[in-house]
Length: 598
Image 1: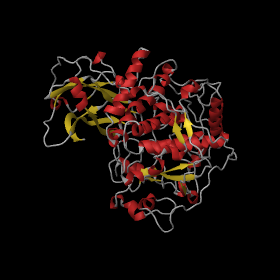
Image 2: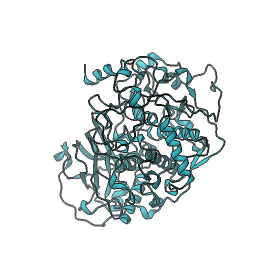
Image 3: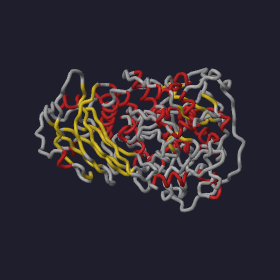
């Protein structure tokens, strides 16, 4: 029996009525460190940075606040008619055991197996509160699951966080909502820590894939953007319900524009504020300007230069490198596919998304926590402002840059389950969340300076004498523990049609628990003076620490046709430079250039 099989056997012994009535909770959980008393409650910051013993909490149940806003009749779908994806979902009594046992029988969306919820890390790893990383939400009756039915009376506007300060009425409403969420019973799925657990369980392997020993993860694939959109939607609805204000909206932290390139003041208003989190990087408090290509240990740039770098980073990621839905969203992820890796992620998920996480939180193991680590990131209220901006970038890519959503039914009909403002489980589909106005919100129309061509990265020099370097076959495979230069041959174009040259870094091997980053330059003779606002700065590879201890293997692709044209590159070869920017080992197995039809 392999290690993974052993873990599956160890974690799949749960019984009873768990999440959605499918047996998540362990019958012995009350006797373990994962008991509901402290594994799921809100853990406040304290002067004891990493307490050695789990803190004790008052587990007295409170009556949940329930306010009914929109009501829908049960059974909105036509009687007797089921979409095959509904049957395969295994929810609401429609579970097909034969297909679950053989997911290759039909192509269908990747679905989590809610029959078992497991620790989001191996047992020998604990989070920094001194307890095991357990993300399992509280039990709920399966019969309560309802399909989402939109009920929109008004469209509210999400505004940038920098517009508000601690004296504003908005701040008072926001802090009231978060404090009430933190005060809810730990058994209430709307409890702030439980909301963070929902993110952890779906984003750090709390579930296995239906019919598979592989862990389910909504990151690194076409699930990333839509899952987080729905997650924010229900979090916002819970806030509205708790303060009895249907007009309340989450703010967005628009780190993509100069006005928003600092930690917003409402999140840095003192230890007693519900929006404060002590597990943030103390070196990055205002007035420090965020670095969208940050790596651990990097010192701040001059603010003016940093703003220029950030705008160029946004141009590169949103425009130069995001020409197709796969570029932007990430690769398809269906049942039967290999688990997605970083190399399958969309451009925005890696940069700037990952970089904002590690810049804001504590990201250096063994102390990676809150925004600095995936499993704990939603414990920081800034997570929701950060992801509101990520969601906003989706609307910009579609509405202003001419991008298009996937039309594949296995994306459109992928379904998720969340708890609504009434603490009831609701089933949603990606297709139902594509028009945000039907979800009752939109984004404030603020300046987007990186859309301007002036933000486009510029070549440092038109003509360079590039240093000699070996062929990739002479260097790889190797551990990237020092700068590496290689001369990569450009392939000869054959056939008729438009093709894009793609730089491919193959076989990137790393430990998922670790913060990993390296930067890729092209035709650059002096990387020490090359910054993100230079064309030669091609991009980076970054891993946000996960809970699981396992070696991952990925490939990273960059579109380079436009870059090479702007640099006036040699028709036969280019210089590629890799620079490690983290302290943990990364193995590279090869580099090549190939054509991809555009």
